Image 1 (tube, rainbow over the protein chains, first blue to last red):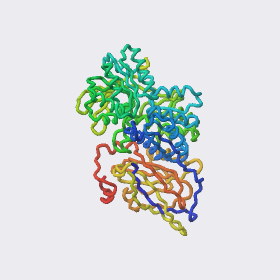
Image 2: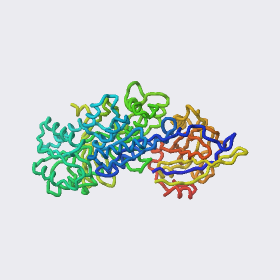
Image 3: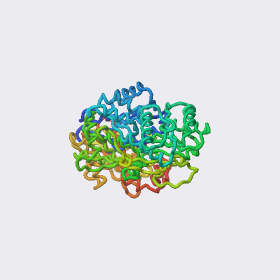
Length: 440
Length: 163
């Protein structure tokens, strides 16, 4: 990326030879933004795609002259290795970014890592925005703090609502005996518990609930426990890699026909890649916050993404990552400073509708910066949704029940089709539920 | 991908002063953007050294909506490969900070990329870096058009005639 082309000018001054700088040396000092991304590990297949989304926002702002009077944006990237279990490592990532002088952080994707990083950043009053961390423990983390001490935001809705959608999906599939197989971490454990509660509330029997640890080479033990409970449906809360291994193990153990109901964590090309044989996925459904609606904002983002980066379509949740980065950059400009508390406050100002602001779209950040420069209110409309933050840094969004369609299977799709790269098939939006529908 | 292509844009010196080379580093997001570009134009705007360091968004808005306005200096709109070949010249660059606005047009004269940076040219200054980004016209202007050049080198070797 970034095809460079250099012009060399022979400069001159009207009245002096050897002109000297007239501005202080640090006038155009870069503004450093931290990125916590998974370049390896379970989310390593998707991390680079999300990283690109952040780079697009930085590119866009730098093409508009940067922030705070001509200062370019510079991204400082650390690889979290999708290491969800090592809180010391997560704290080290935060320390490393702070040593690099970042004024805000985008990431992580995995909820456990986001919590581990914000355990350092929040006390240091450094704003942090995640694209993809949906755990309800993050809500609890912020609720335990006074409003002035909250610095964590996310551009994706929390799992508290999605668990209800899983139960609705189970009803849609006429599930009579549901097993819940979930990650044993800050993302999976509360999500699994919430799904169990939602199924119970809807009167759907639960066969068994089995936690598992990410990163194992096989899950035959857990799969065996589930098989013994003889479910007709399995609710799977996993990351792409573990989900892929589980599906293979199920097939290898002769698990037979079962309906899988995944979540946003596996709605990714990396999941299909991990399984290897798409035909094993002909009965995979799932739930997810709607992040790729065919809105003008998403279209604007997708067009810029394809024109500026690889030419490929953005991967799922890329739009959430772009919005997280864009909001942080706009908030810095709005605050007029890199002070953490001021930027945190400005995040609310640029994302929500207090007065009668000008709406600004994803993919039009130069216009947004222009409006801010004129002292006008803006209400940024994200590529992933309206991204209006509530008092604990959450957003609301509609949800979808999706279905995976292998390339070998031809099925009608009533909703939006997300084609996966490299002929990996597609995700079909089978049903859309508004947040009000889910809430009721 | 990151590739360097040298080009010289000569500025005329005032009598008694030796030419001081200043590098303007223009960055296309990807090579395809360069291939779709037929013409380029560089504008230099005078800005208030205290209040104008954040003028770029307003200048881009002006350029996109109502034309180039009143730059202090400007090149002609010339084939993009002429920039690369060093065949474009300026007059004086006054002291102090300026806004450098680069415009890229396709073969139908649509503004498909632009970018702006505020910088100060002086002896031993770092390169002036102008990052380009697709305008709202980029997609409609390039949609359905196939590239006929395989690389920037091919494009300029062919006299800029292919894209």
